[in-house]
Figure (spheres, helix red, strand yellow):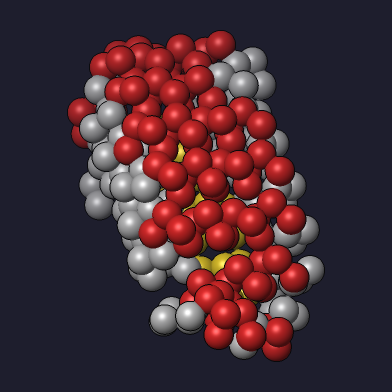
Length: 212
């Protein structure tokens, strides 16, 4: 399917926005991100590309000069795929929006994404809801936020982050004098967390309860 999709991708390299579904989606997506100089939006939501697909997409992410919005919602991506995407974030200089919600990256994936947050200076919106992230992942995300200056919106809702993760995120926000975060979406258990709530108030971050 990859080879067939790649062969069909040549005609698409001048497109700015692509939403792809179907059996050949991965080959097309990788070929376009590797060779297109105009692609701005790539929507691969709900295609079950899994870790192998995320690894392949990461190759395009590393070299794409134009991609701004990448939708990978609902693709059964685990920690290996998250690590690959994180490596792409470290090298990419154009991506503004990354949707990784409803995957299975877990704590290990969140730790990997944290590394991308530390290095990336352009990403504005990151969606990580429904990813089985617990306190270990929450602490790691906090570590990334302690140095990141570009991220404006972060969705961590519907995960399993508890006191340790929330506290770490709060400490990170307070310690970053150049923090760019303005909106943080969390689950009901965290919206009134004392340390997180106080840190958000001090830094002008709106902490929202996400009910979806």
